[in-house]
Length: 73
Image (cartoon, rainbow, N blue to C red; front, top):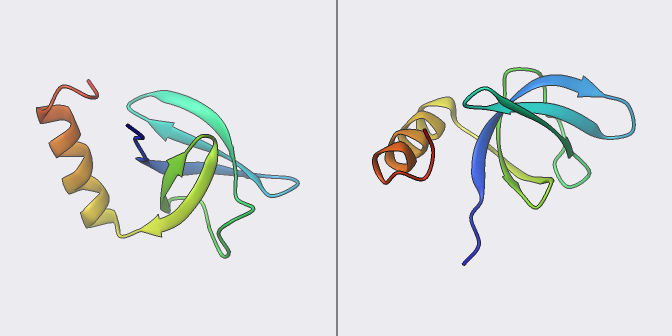
């Protein structure tokens, strides 16, 4: 099973990279597959790559469901 997680972009880095935050955990990811991402955007991340941008309301709903299912804290 694969799990793609919505994360919030906290910093844009050089060379199509970004720093993201999910529940207090930060990670560097690639933005090579998604154009126009800015700080504050939510992106769907899978295996270190942003796959798409996500509406903040949808991100909140998804994160709440994941927390309810015990997938995140």
